[in-house]
Image (cartoon, rainbow over all chains, first blue to last red; front, side, top):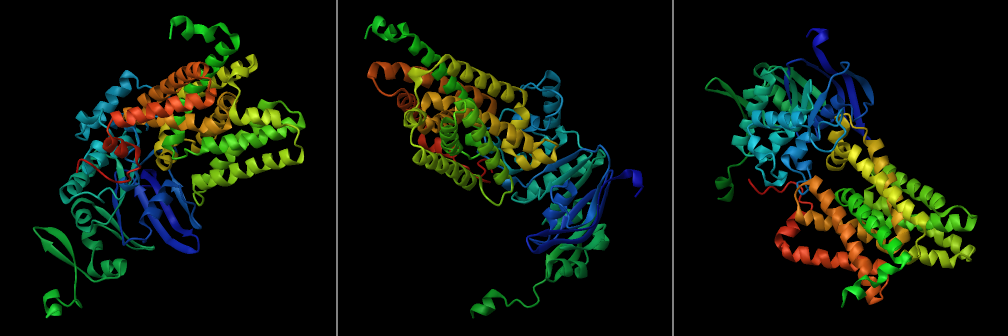
Length: 259
Length: 287
């Protein structure tokens, strides 16, 4: 990576919560146009890695590098959103513009920009709707729209594919791929290994420390996955795509167990 | 009742002053209360009014100006609550409980040691709307203008920090400064309005108008307007009723507000109201 293209980087970063090391000696570089997925089991430090990139957690050791004057957009897990909060889709998107205009209401130009970003994400007709009255995929798009409205250089998303059905999961990853094609760097955490293998060019396997890092085809191997998840997994090929499945070597089939 | 009887209290200057102060105080509580309710800090009004009571007792005993002593005490308590809450180890409800009750207890201890200020403490507890001075009128108007200016000029930052503090911080909003600003406005609002409504009832006016407004709208901007209007109208109607029914003004204002809540709650349908009021976490309705 050309040093001038680097936006964010972790250099041998370790983070400690209480007495537990939740991230150990992690190194990651995010450059312009990158599209990186961080995978790992629950408690493996995925969200902490994202927060280290955001500089909302202070590393116990190592350091975080951030290019000067870059804007970082962040999409939190939608499970953390208070859906009863009285805000419409348009109001959520406008939140991202806290600098410049001081007046509470949107200017004509801002209204146009909100409409454009919502149209681009396919939810242009929902601007006046309350956020609770949307499907999971639409809700995810609203928060992506808010992050994009802030004009970021890099977009960080925490579990954008959790809590949604399979079709919505693919729609969200496809949408992010399209946004990345326009040049925006994206880093996301996910549990969806197959979606990641199909859509993302770069993967980081994490289990407190970085186990492996690179393109899915060379990185998502049975050995790396077992070290990452602590359970055996197989990587199959189907229609030119990688399919990752659990391997159940020592499981007794239910019917036999019952007899 | 004739028009003459209805307008009878308006011939008295003390009533007119009281009505102006109460109406502005109601609107002020309604406006600031929106942030209080949406941050899940409904008891902060109750707590701060008790906390300020400690400051009021101390300033009365030391011969300080009431607004200066109680105001500084209230702002310090508000900032302390914000500070403790931001560490996320202690929840806002617990922080409010610890800091404000300690402050209230200090006030009680001062009174029991130097029990010569009972008269003004009674007024602090229950309000003295009909005894408001021109200073009180100017203080309430000044605080209301301050609150309006802060909400107007920091509208988006306040909304962002209230809705999603973590993302607001990441997006470059100075969340600590915004929280401190809100606590400053809240403490001065409680201080100014407790003279009108009394320590015990001010928290009700910080909570009931926003809750009614929440039942009536899904938009944050409209909630601010509706809540302020409900606070003002309840205070105006409550003041007039209190004169004709000969009931304490603070109690009448709060009862008018509570009756309005009951009417709106029933009118909007109990099921719908419950889903709007409850913190539903990740429950989604359109999936």
